[in-house]
Image 1 (cartoon, rainbow, N blue to C red):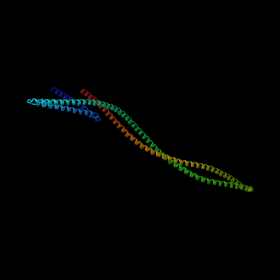
Image 2 (image 1 turned 120 degrees about the horizontal axis):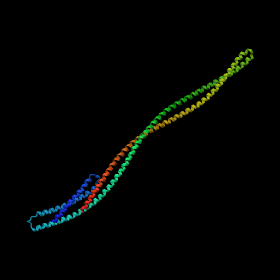
Image 3 (image 1 turned 90 degrees about the vertical axis):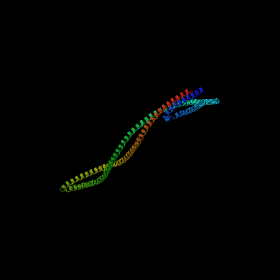
Image 4 (image 1 turned 90 degrees about the horizontal axis):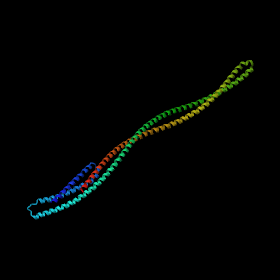
Length: 377
């Protein structure tokens, strides 16, 4: 009976030990449940807990059987026969033997479970260390990525500032092109006026040439008249000389007329010479005015081309405005996205640090379980 009670106490001690181990397992399980990312660390602990619960239940069943046997003996009446009491003790001894065998089997299973839990805790500690190393590497990588994203964000901000400067430069270029276009319009109007004046001058030169032709004809007629007058004065002088004293007065008049005719003839010759020079000069002026008209026409064509080019430049500048605005919007969106990515990466880095801490904690818990399993061996 003393040995029976000793084995029963051992069973109770084993049950208490299992309860303690369940407590050590339950505490880290609830700690790990705080983070769903560590769910793979919970699985072996839960399996071990279920196994221990089954073993404790089995031991509890054996103990209940022993209690039932002892209760049957206690309820046996003293007046029973010795044979009946002997049979009861034999039955009790047989039941006790079966219970001890059951305890031995359960004890072996319990030790195997403890060893398995030791292996699982060792593997869990190794996995937790790997997770801690990976989390540390992830933290470093995310920190580097955050620094790179921050640098990219600064670069995007710098690009945005340069875009603003480019837009200001494009605005100044557009204003200059508009001013140049207005200046070309004014120059084109001036050139048109010059061309009109040149054309009018050429027309007047043509009319003046026609008048000069008429003046030349008139001076030729005056020369011919002077020549005829000179001949008539010469004939009158000859006739006055023949008349003697009576023709002396007529001879004086004839000499005066002759002198006047010679002067008129010289003046007509001078007029003809001057008219010839004027005609030559007018021909030169006509050629110059023709060149002026031609150059003016070419200038008008060049002004038109420049006007068209400036118009195209103005349109392209406005297109550049639109592109710069689109680029500015895209740069702003990229800057916002970069800041958002940087913020998320910082969050990931913080989570990685937290996961690293949890992995270290899980490794410590696994090591604690491993030491606990050694104590039970």
